Image (cartoon, rainbow, N blue to C red; front, top):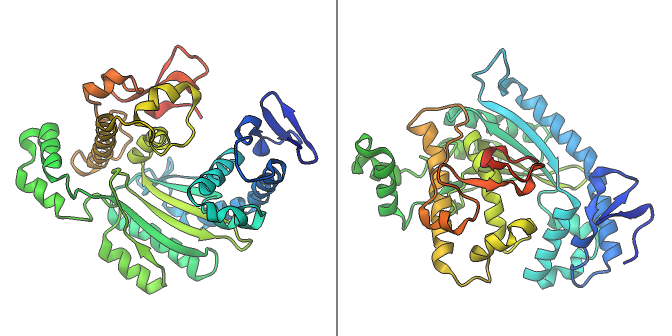
Length: 363
């Protein structure tokens, strides 16, 4: 494979001027079909470098409009725990391009150009607003500030998606789950009330966000999630054309999603850590073991529900490191769970003998 100028192979990685933001594993880019690999690699590296300034500007915009809502030592009760930002890694961009080609071959001509890749990758720039508070009014205030930034030209918001778990078809399972977890503290009538309230697990009331969206001319969608994942995704586009996503998510859900994402990747047939590949085979697309797939899906769904209920029923505003206990059938598969709490073995850890709980996986 011919490499772009200023690139060299270091072990299994390709480096451009020793800049870590442009490092990518060489063996990850050799299996993308239909492309001149060196040209595709060069385009992805160029986009990654060009996105740096846009990411810095986005970070500055969010600090400007939201800093007064971020908790600190002097103001611990503010609704935002922290604001994070990142640029999509070249490796992740390459994987997404490959996924586009496999699932939508008609996109191949477009994705042969740097402009086409830039247009199709919707989250080259990503930010995450992690909520400390579960107060829907607080979340509405944060969205209002983003909408105001859009109106005055600091942001260009193209769409807002409110993700919430749908209980349709899971009504009886939900009642059983609630009464198992909370016993006599919650009645069937209370469970049915929750089932009928689409806003119950959402971070913002639908009527409130609809009013704001109409006032500021923002398109809002409400895609239900059968995964249980709950979040608000705000799609943006920068003046230089980079598409980004601002995620608004609660602190407990964020901690769970950091690890559940590994299971999501396996379920969707995306690349997972080689050390986990064998363990994850029962839930990958090629597996015909529908029982395990359904069991894993049900577990992750109710694990997310469990995280949202912490703020609702227990009224805890701190991060709770106890997760929903996995069923024995999953524990027996050794997909990474243990009896006391879901756990991922130390595949990513410096010390392979350590079991890292979900909420302490090293980056």
